[in-house]
Length: 375
View: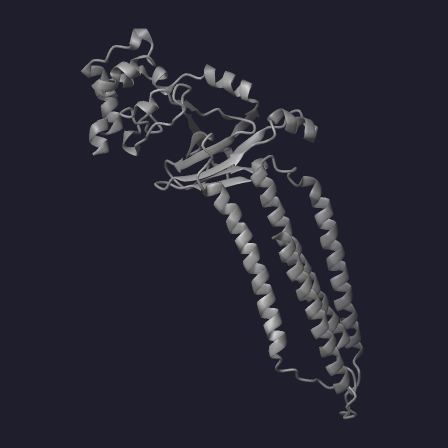
């Protein structure tokens, strides 16, 4: 696909040169007209302005080239995911085509201003109609643009389609002003359901304890850990206002929209340690940031992403305690038929169902009982 776009761009350039050559010959023929107008002489200021057009264009190209080369030291390193590298290749292909078109058209614009400045015996020639030329400069750019849009759509489709069966599902939730993550527990490797009506001070993600898959779910807010070379599916949502998940080194970016869950899957193929060695920066860390201005604390809405080998990830995961283990009072919300399954995640000294007086404040904080909230 890249070669097709490049070939079409080359064809367009060649055809444009041919048409301009023909146009120049027509204009030269018109300039042989001996008709003159009295009292009109070549203006010195016109010549100065003509040369200034050329000088401005040359200096502009030099300045733009210097700016690009100088800024390249601040570019992000090579993407740490296959999707990211594909995205980068599409970006640079698009930028190359746009830059070539920009430079060629502006070079002609400034050159024509210089070449066809007013001179004595110079008469304007109208070139009002050329269907072939109009067809060329309409169809070729349209085809190139359509191919670029199609390749971009394919990249978008790939990261929003169903993730591979072995993907690690992680829920990431944005709220003012931090990220919260929920992992499936080691027992069933599946995320449980959630319900926004169940959100309260302790259950900030609205974990639904009527779903037994949620009993071993783990929540973290300090940093996200993922294994290298394994597909990761981010299930993204927001609690309050619009946020946006951005992992720059993975080229991962997806809006977190209240009431409308989104998703993005990717594969990280470079560990944090590998990136430290590649960049020569032993303090390097992958970052998850918010790229949607979400309030006064937007600047602080960031967390660290740790990419590690499978063994290290499994060790870290084994150290995490399920959310229900850290909130044993919520055992009272588990349906009676599932209490036996949930009890194994609750410390022995807290396994008994809390009294009504203990559970009442939590019910008030939630705003409704789990069964009522789901109806």
